[in-house]
Image (tube, one colour):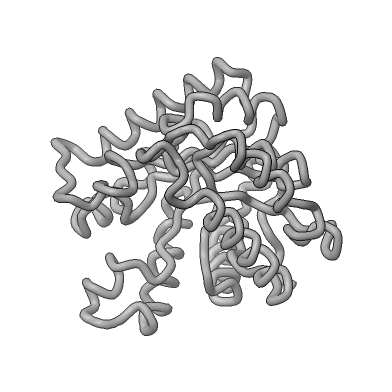
Length: 266
């Protein structure tokens, strides 16, 4: 089984070794997590206040706790797994962390739910902070920046400061390729990725078969693996410490070859 990101972000920084986030660690676990997400979405979808970031009703909140368990998220069968939960809702984050989840990945960096920072601080867990322009409903509606690199760094810097004020220690920054950005914006960020080191937290990147690859190459997502590997390698050379991927074997090979290359320099 491929290795996943270690829970201690400090170890990632100390070793300066990029780790791979595996979206589907094992078929059985993947199915369990998939069913769990479907159950949660089915219970919550359409029942939130009608806008993104709305509070979950007491009735739905009670059902969330009943649907999430250590068994359903794979912890019982694979206790060594490090599980990252993708949510911007503090109620879901708390329920999942209570049942053994390890990391919270928040697309809004705490903006869409003002209670998220308190929840992360309470559980003292690693927190992946992502950049997003607008919200998931409108983020791709003609995104515009004066200077996309400076604006994304500024956004993440401000959110990191707020997280630090809440006592959150293990932070990971993700500039988020593709969310609220044009293809040109994405490549501009990649070209300047080393500038994100100023944030002083591990940097996560995710290119896996995204449109910035297949549109540029005039191909399809299915045929974008080679392009994904190319961008993963470029990101590693520019300071990325964590890769979010679908194709674990190929990403791991990128890391092995990159580490072999830089080890020869010393």
